[in-house]
Image (cartoon, rainbow, N blue to C red; front, side, top):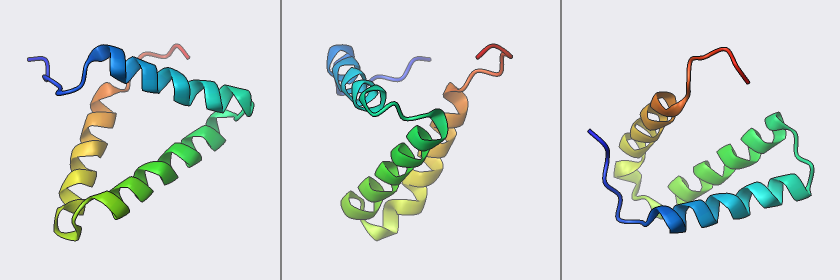
Length: 75
């Protein structure tokens, strides 16, 4: 069952494109891009989520990330 979002696909795509553009502008390799994005996620959680909810948010985020990654061998 698809998950409904309170955000439009257009808004999500716009933000994603802007983030990708910044990484491409700086010619960030994959490992650096992942480090920066990981630090951004950590910062968002630590500054915007109540301490009592952080571990649940992290588990949910990690599960969503794992579910969204394809197991095919192409890259």
